[in-house]
Image 1 (tube, rainbow, N blue to C red):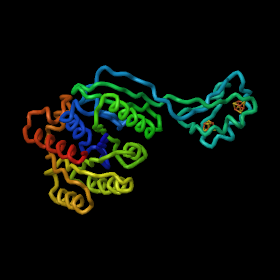
Image 2 (tube, rainbow, N blue to C red):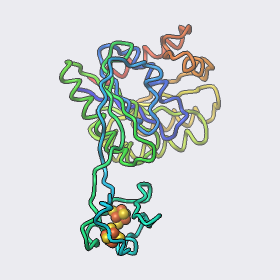
Image 3 (cartoon, rainbow, N blue to C red):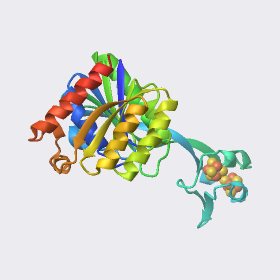
Image 4 (cartoon, helix red, strand yellow):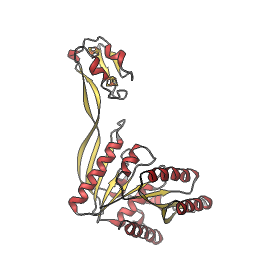
Length: 291
Ligand code: SF4
Ligand code: SF4
């Protein structure tokens, strides 16, 4: 089984548009994953249906049994995160401040405190409108542990691929180089970096390259928004050439990208033969690399 993960060093490079376009070309013979769990938006373009939702639990928070609390304040003075207070004669724990360290449960003389696993998001298994199985997720507002939810998306994608006899998983990865990206890259067969010819796009590509290199995963690159800056385009292609990144070419800067999002369509579905051919060609090259 081959797992292609699409990433970019920053948001706004067109990563999701590129992933969705490739998912359209590859459908229905793939599993589509959306591991950008903090800001999932593949569903806007792939219109998943027949969705099964499963709550995702991760991380613990302190909870108080009011009847047992004698308001001695010991937990308040020991909490390093100022997460506990007494309001109107009741002990309250602020879930946004509680780091789940559990110290208060050991301090409390009346066993009024306990740790409880919290719901942190929802995992969805659906069928995209292109007929491909799709695994996506949404992290709850203010919840952390997005790396764990990313891992859940990837593990579920693998299980669905095995179950449905699909040999390719195409995943829209999170932006940046943090923990969620590392979770998205672990065990990937191939990373497709989407970048753009701007100062930020170039420097974020360098950071992403460093990370992927450390993780020892094969890299390919698509330069999106070509035509914006010839100097950076040349620098990006040269960097790819000199650093073992397989250069899969360019997608031109085109207002059709924004139009496709507002119409809920992928780029290869739009009325533009050149872009259709470019997406077909990139997919063909990715498949050849994934042999
Ligand atoms: S679990 Fe830790 S952070 Fe949360 S309230 Fe207790 S002591 Fe404070
Ligand atoms: S340590 Fe226990 S009894 Fe004392 S205030 Fe905290 S929860 Fe209440």
